[in-house]
Length: 107
Image 1 (cartoon, rainbow, N blue to C red):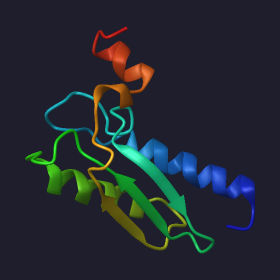
Image 2 (cartoon, rainbow, N blue to C red; image 1 turned 30 degrees about the vertical axis):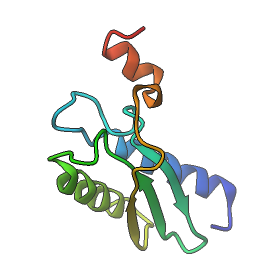
Image 3 (cartoon, helix red, strand yellow; image 1 turned 135 degrees about the vertical axis):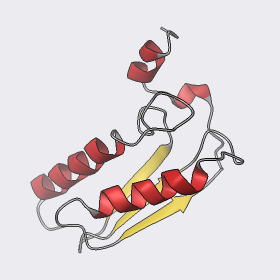
Image 4 (cartoon, one colour; image 1 turned 90 degrees about the vertical axis):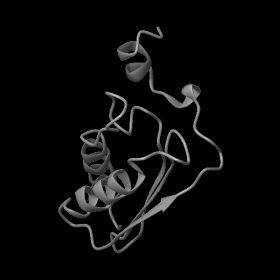
């Protein structure tokens, strides 16, 4: 992206979309759960999301990954979306945002 303000705006829109996707087993969005490790936006607005799940055998894995792909792709100005599901480093409760910890009564 040529303009830093455009980049920041697009990144904020992506984060907002990710905050609307919930893990069906945990009443928190995937962003605040700490499942999103990286959002990479290329010069031509191709987006690569690196993410994990709370457990490798998560029964909602396919649903969550498809939802991330579909919802991010719907953000205006995005060309392509690639979702890279990784399990290293493994997710743990330390990855929760402060908002999520507060919601779960951990703070």
